[in-house]
Amino acid sequence: MSSATGARRCGDFRTGYHQEMTWFPSPRSAAFAVAGLVLLACAPLVFKAYGLALLIQIGYYGIAALGLNLVTGFSGQISLGHAAFFGFGAFFSAWLNNRFGVPVLLAIPLAGLATALVGLVFGTPAARIKGLYLAIATLAAQYILEDFFSRAAWFTGGAAGATAHPPGLAGFEIRGDTSYFYLVLVVGVLMFAFAANLMRTRAGRAMVAVRDHYLAAEIMGIALTRTRVLAFALASFYAGVAGALMGHYIGFVSTESINILLSVQMLGMIIIGGLGSIMGSLLGAAFMVLMPEAMESLFHALGSGGADKGLVYLKEISIGAVIILFLVFEPDGLAHRWRQVKAWWKLYPFSH
Image (cartoon, rainbow, N blue to C red; front, side, top):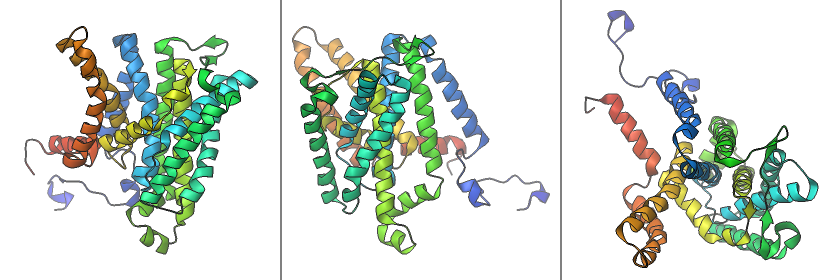
């Protein structure tokens, strides 16, 4: 019905391609995003040190999960070695600062670029295979880098680990959870905005096309190997930046924490949050960080003394159980559930 009749249009009308590629589907969505950022900026006024520490963990794990989602969720290449690139970024940033005196705020992006180059080394041959063979190739990258970390004492400190100094700006060190929270928030917003804009470009659409049907994508003129290698490089860059943020926040980087279990946990983040979803990467990271903390609090409330020590082991079991439950009952992750909630609220009180 035309607008001349005075009737209101209902539904979701898009009359141009530029409307399909907008960041926000409506001005209301943009307003909610801005309001969310304002609330996050006010988090130090509400949360104490413990709460800010959890938010910082969600921040750098969310960046790492977003990188894994770029290569797995958006380009369809499973990676079981993401934690190794995460650790390489942490060690490289600390090495630059300790050995050459590079400022930490400059060492963090340089660590991302160096990790991207390492990702190119492993991603170039791995991009020519797919499926189970690709998973084995990325698993080999995990163990190769783990062995490098343990043997290259000049780079990682060996078994002793490496010290990572806090970042500084204009002669002042960014110490404390409040200051570091704002650093992670700024870096996170930039990284997520870059990924959102990437999906609107030709390269981002090519990654999705390769994921959906690589033969059809190749027929349309998309270079499969170049697109897959680009996805590996971007994923490694995100992992390197996230690892550097983690290292300088904790103040210490150890080879023991960079293992295959961390890679599986990062894979669980994007499965729980939603494959192929930028927001799902952050939701999955928040879920994986907060769930063990909530379970540990519950265990301590239920038991005392030695009784709850055995229950703590259930935290690791629960992670695997949650991944299985999401694969069975909600394979599209938390992001899909959030979209359903928004659709229900948009149509409320009508059912359709």
